[in-house]
Length: 224
Ligand SMILES: *[C@@H]1O[C@H](CO)[C@@H](O)[C@H](O)[C@H]1NC(C)=O
Image (cartoon, rainbow, N blue to C red; front, side):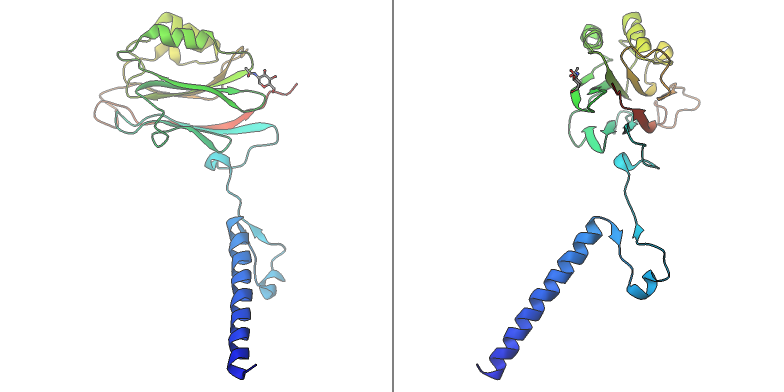
């Protein structure tokens, strides 16, 4: 073999090894572990690890808790979104949200999404929502986000059904209010996961609508 051939072979081998090292390094970066050089690692007690929390929560949820984040819509412009266990279940990008009330049902044991639906509360049929809420199975978590107007078709039946899921504010929910809520069927107490803003021309952030609301937290898994 000629010398130039040998050099080419060596160059190829070097390139392969370099690529392999690069891929390994970038792989460890994608799992978000930053390895310090040895001389720095001697000073630092351990590898610095940056872990992103589920749904971007400010701190991770304890064992046997589900992470969630619910955002209401912004005025009648940007639709609401819901994240559950790091999965976006409803959002404008998924194109499965609508004006009114957006509701997702999740199995409280497995965290599996059972149903999701949006209900037009301005010109829709309130009976559809009544039936939906009456058919919620046992041990189910209920995630709710308002968009534009959740109030016009609101009635006493619907208020009662949401109150039974643990809502405190649905009693006063009206035209163009902002509302985010996580409740559950057969909840004994009021849910701690709820935010509400009344539409008020004096304080509304947008022209005709209050500010959007964001609710995040850890909800205990139902364990048997
Ligand atoms: C929720 O999950 C549990 C455990 O797999 C199952 O027994 C139960 O039937 C599920 N509930 C619904 C409403 O799907």
